[in-house]
Image: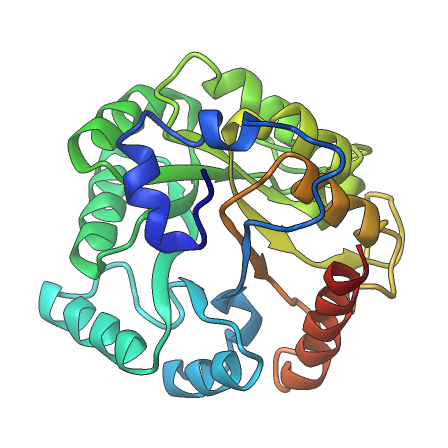
Length: 274
């Protein structure tokens, strides 16, 4: 059985998470990908929501993970509904939000209320360790997945996917990982290895690249940096990852389109070749 895109996230979540799907039939000979490409709107943080939607459509990215630059977390339910309607009218699936910090109970409440009001299926977040029990209960209440985002060396909570996995492996299966591949390699971890090892909890992916696999870093267009992108994509195909691979392009915030377009084109070329 296969499913495509964020539209199936809620259905899968009701089956107690992503584990069964991502671990299902790890056939090395499989060459078709079951994931979709999307846009993390941190890439367009200096642009408006309208401009963001135009860029997403121009690049054929039909799944959006919205950063609070484009819809503040303290927006009213009416404002959230209006923004969600705008995204839908543009032909784009507003599948998630993030990265969202959840360091206090009020921030956990706000994140889930925000996601529910927008019809989102995934919160890409950074919950404090002592907030994980509350997050676990909210997942059960709202049936919204939480994907913990790693931020590399210097991140005191979740520097690598390995650290995040150890903290959540005994919790509800709808709490999992958003593997940011640049921060992962900066932490000395191979993103492909992490994706395969933690396939049972892989909910979201941030696609990007860095010039060097070290703590000090500069961002790069995908394919120009230190990450073995073809190997990572082959691994996603192998584990039958079925979530979203969202481009989080950090370079050139004033004019992200050229670098984003190059990155999207490179990934599509690799996928066509494997």
